[in-house]
Length: 308
Picture: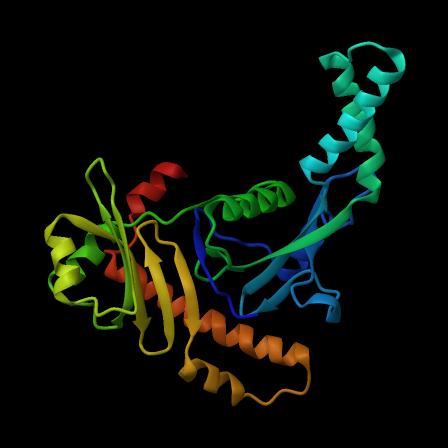
């Protein structure tokens, strides 16, 4: 249940749907397995899995939702092999050359035969809407997957006025300043990893792991003009994370203080465990995100106004 990455989107308008209304909307696009001739199917599923029938898990005005994407596995090499065999059979038996258009028709026929027999694989994507804070938080480090999730949610709801956060200060500039000046905002501590990028045409990239970020080696890279594009941090010794220059959070870790707090909650079943962990997670992430906004100068409200 604990998120491992975070793509943050800001709602441009208040999210006013209740849990019941959201359930009704998502149920229209509930997951259905691939049909015989379908290569892919996507839909909404209960975040709690098979132990629950609810397509929305609501806690404290936060709504966890999840998609399941099922796709048929049909390697191009396999299709090509079947097509080549069929083409060779025709050319041998009929003593003629199979042209491009006919080969495409053969390929379509082969696909119709193979798709129903193909294996399938499923991927799940989790997110939650924080209607109080006005955020959509998606558990992925991939911009492509985040945008695909947003697009599917927008298709389901008919409208989804969200955008990536607009910050007043550049994350790359601020993170570079922290290492250059050997300072870090009070609520954060430097960890042991960073990525440095040369801003020149060559664009050299230096990845540092398990290293003192205030060492002479790091300072040499900074003096050479490199910018910090990823930085490992700890927030109040409760959460570990890597933040990048696009405000994407990776390697999200809820540390011992949070895990111990979760274990102190008495539960009787898996659903109660999920409830307790989700409540703790959304509380921690709400405070973490506020802190991150603060250290990057806050949100640019004028930029949001132009988008409304």
